[in-house]
View 1 (spheres, rainbow, N blue to C red):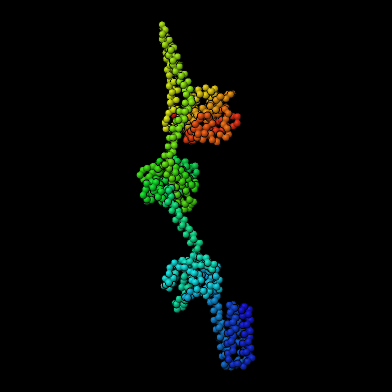
View 2 (view 1 turned 90 degrees about the vertical axis):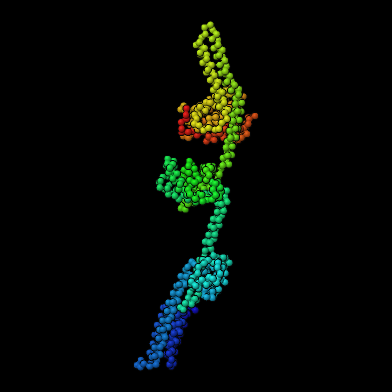
Length: 626
């Protein structure tokens, strides 16, 4: 019934009581019936309606009394009127108190409905008596559907412990907390954190339970995913054949921040202060290593590494400086090569990749991935040895091609020696020996003998089989020696060799003299052979120059037919050759040799301009010894 209907019927009832009280000769306390009108209007749950109804009933009671009785004597009608007024007043007071209590309960219920948690109340028989809005939204049942239902049956609650034990704990302490699983109306399974509070009546008897549930399904799923991820990471960490080191670099961050330098300035500062680098390196603390790393370092467990990185890096390690600068510059990854020192003192060559996770917690979880390259180093050394053998064989083959030129070069001083010796003998056989001419002749013999010796020495040096040397060389001298070896061979084919160099000379380079000579000899011989038998002028131009502050260039250009465009991409491939009877190893060895010296070797062949080989080498800031 609506509030307006309740007000109307209350007014009608009050008017009916008034009419009966005034118009009928009934002697009873008819006015007491006004209580029904007050109780009826109380159902509107409006305080003002109750007060208005009570005031109206009081006025009607007094009015009926005045109309029906005399005021001069106080008799039973007066007492009946007072009883009626007392009943109206008491009823009004009780209704107002009930309204206030109902209002408070409604306010509390609204607060419970505002909660983000699912809240419901059940009696001692497990029957639901209250069901808030969040419970409706989360579980799917409306309050009308949930009220009167058994809580565990409706929600299909699953407990981690025995239900009887949980109930006993609730009775003993008045509270219980735990995690349970429940199902929604759609059948979805929810994981909730449950908090129960036992309600008592005024005698202390348990009458109900207030349950507050927090949905932690997503949180539990995220936690389980995190646990699985951690387990998966741990399996990978332990099972990986790559060495993994976990380090704490928070101390390094503090030390670098105190320097107040960055970028190139930081690198220069650290390079000038090796003691500072060693001190900072000591702050990098190892927190864990995987079994592969333990095996690599010859350890039986991770306990031997729970210190700083000095346990693994040698005293003369240079890789840590670059790693430190990368860390200071905020890089996420850094790669390098170094040597680790095992617990038994062995030096293990390794490649490493270090990752720096983002701050703020990343400094405590720096990961270093280490690969033992001992076998690769051994294979590389074997490859270099085989390459040296092949290069030596190529030099022998080159000298074989230059044998006619070598014989001619050696024959020239030998012929001069014979001629000078015969002349000297003639000067001595004269009646009066011309000792001055004899002395001059002997001087020529000595000079030509030295020239022959230099030729043989140069050839033996070029043919020498020795380990590569990293010496500081004047590149001009290397070029002079190489051109001297091939000068006769080029002249035999009517090839003109032009050497162009800057007036102020070239800076020194660091490398192996014989290997660089072999590169130049090979390029010059190839240039001459490319023009062999062709009409017209035949010219090979060897020019040198400085490219920039770090490199210099040597260019060998011929006036021959050039290189076919289809052959350019494969020209430096092993066993590829355009010469009849060629091995196809000369240019491959040349490029490998140049790259081993930190340089580059390339070729260009514009149509009609012959072939041009460009040799780029890094030069040194040091001064070559004379």
